Length: 210
Image (cartoon, rainbow, N blue to C red; front, side):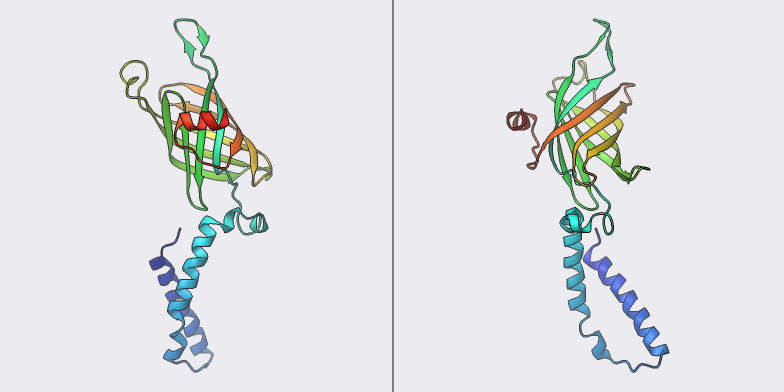
């Protein structure tokens, strides 16, 4: 998101360029022409804030002004790890998790909550698919297990995932993902049952999403 200073500098450059073009055309200029400068800066700041937090998710602007899916809310997530338990020789059972997603035009944060750990994004990129009917979200995340598990059977680690949107292009009703970690584990995830409220604790999300 642009800051007020950045907007002021950009507008100052545009004003100088505009004034120079008018001067070269022989148009008389005076300092009075700069009187609305601060007012225009204020208006642009308000517009920038509205674009960052509101306009990008309004259907009227989709496809021509903004091309970004609205993922906000809390999702119920089913995780299938491909890790084989050496004691049983089988995959571990499905894990139920929840993902609280906070999003603006320029920012995205996904907090993935399981009974034993929490993951938060370190970086992300959102791109439309070649077919143009949905989006791919590429993420790098850091996972932090509960303190009682560290040094016992789970440690902090980083991973990456590719998330695909499904359903309506700009308001998807489900997501699928493939992930891999620096612990040499891989797996799949399904995001469904979104609610608008963003939860930040596993117990609260489980109580309200089931």
